[in-house]
Length: 162
Image (cartoon, rainbow, N blue to C red; front, top):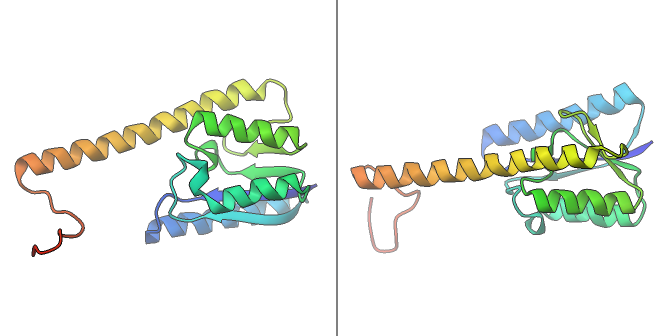
């Protein structure tokens, strides 16, 4: 089977780039194990999974699917594919209409199965909630440090010195 692989990391920090390399290595091992032909690996670096419109490689993958370049997309887990339930389900449905299945390895979900859409929606909702929770924790942390007078921004406003 001709497959495409999709991976993503949220930041371009060194530890995240190591995660990206680990995801790429995972797909190399996956194709050896399954005997599938890896047509293309799509990788977005330093981009949040909450909005598909900002992910160039994801959009490229969707475009290539329209041109029939592959039969299946393999993703390590749903949170790498999308952290927004609506976007996740829309993309899965669009790919399914094009005859392209999506396989989420960690969750063991293959959209070729009829019942997988409900399960995909549940996992996508968890991924979205996790993203919202992380964002809320970061805001709370900044607020507390500001109140304590210990907050240091990553860069100072123009005209100020640290």
